[in-house]
Image (tube, rainbow, N blue to C red):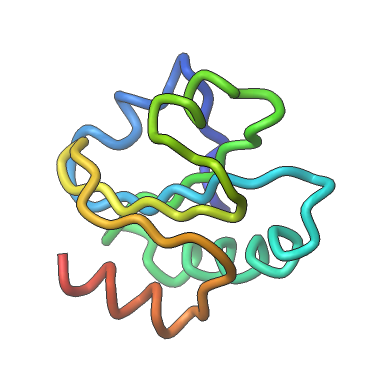
Length: 102
């Protein structure tokens, strides 16, 4: 299960290792297609990477901090630093490839 991230747990959740964060909202059609992919990755990559999701309606500060203008936006972090940003619906294979190459 993907970790629900908020401004309270965000930094400690992504500070070590590889993390993939999905910025989404419940009213966003493509986000609804992206979420099951993110959840599958969370299960498959447990122990290898942290997979998280941020509801931009509930956490606008985090969305603004990372310049999220369109959703879904997925940001890949390595030891707390953003290393890749993907806007729009992403396939599971594309995301797995990016995670394994960090």
